[in-house]
Image (cartoon, rainbow, N blue to C red):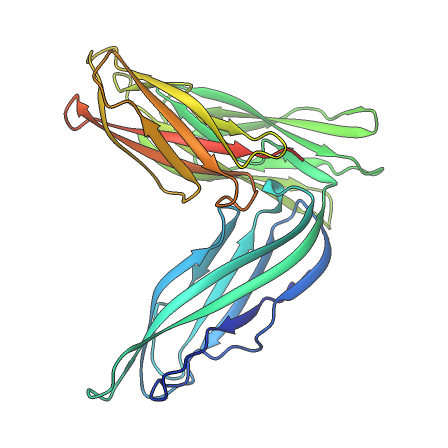
Length: 335
């Protein structure tokens, strides 16, 4: 199914401000109506430089939440050039109900006339849908932190009378293997377990992987599960738990969890700073030295748009000097 995303360019009152060179089709939000969760919602909007002589430079592409990915194919355009602005929404991570997803493309127009000033513009894309959950994956996203190997289970459930069959499970990494277990049906719900195994030789560092589950259902041909993997050195700092998992209760505006960090090989710890790559996550910590470092990871419901998500916290230590820890964080909301 082809879902059309429409664009909105923020207007300006400056009388000498040029007409936005990447003109929108129409300034409305497109409502898709009722959509069944499972498949990703994907759309590409082609924007063409139809303005005055000058260069359009894309300065930023931003999605409204972690469930939405926005990309652009070209970042510098001359008159007549085009760029594809694509958005993909992972519906597996979304609860049932009405949602609006947004992506913003920011760009600067620099006229060829050396006397004219550059101007900044934005193109805003939006799509709205009422999600009905029939097919789901638990967990809808996965964060893994390990110094050796790791095993996890993804469970695909289908409440329909004619459930789908998971035919294949793949990922791009040669260090991640997947196996599909036979489906079982209980109380009208069909469940298929997919076993995920991260090998001990997975490269050290942080990486974003995607597990693609291929099915026999034309309406839901594939399910994509984002997987964040942090591979630590064996003698590195050890967090407990290895993934900070925050679970919201009904009505909670914020929720948190505690993480303790130890260093068997280095002894005393003192945390210097903790930063996260997601605006919904803040981290509090004890600044004193000790054999255990304590972090409190807090997730703000409003800044997370009330949606499940994942992020990465970078913790820097004053003792041992220069040591760092990459801590995966994930959060969920009740249905």
